[in-house]
Length: 77
Image 1 (tube, rainbow, N blue to C red):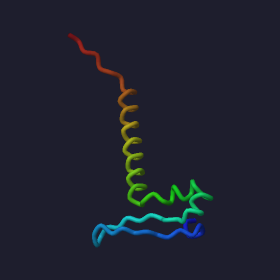
Image 2 (image 1 turned 120 degrees about the vertical axis):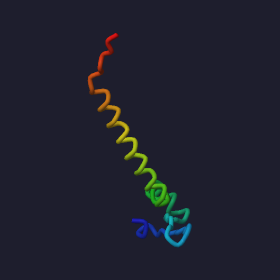
Image 3 (image 1 turned 135 degrees about the vertical axis):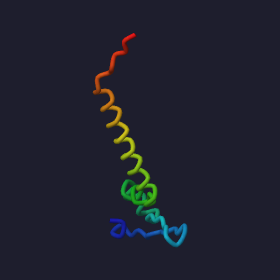
Image 4 (image 1 turned 90 degrees about the vertical axis):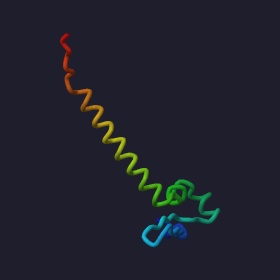
C-alpha cells in the first residue's frame, strides 16, 4: 500500500542486529490520504510496542476478571 502511494522506506539502524523503519510521503500524498499515511508513518518499533501493550492489558484484564469470579473466603474470628 505504501509503495502504491509513492512512499519511501526510511530505516534507522541502532546496531548491526537492530533496525527500525517507517514510510515517508510527500506533502501532496499526505494531504490526499491522511489516515493511510499517518498509519504507515508509525515506526515498526512503535507498532510492536503497541501490540505488546495490548497483550499485557488483555492478560491483566483476564487475571482481574478471574479473581473477581472466585468466591472470597470468609474469615472466622
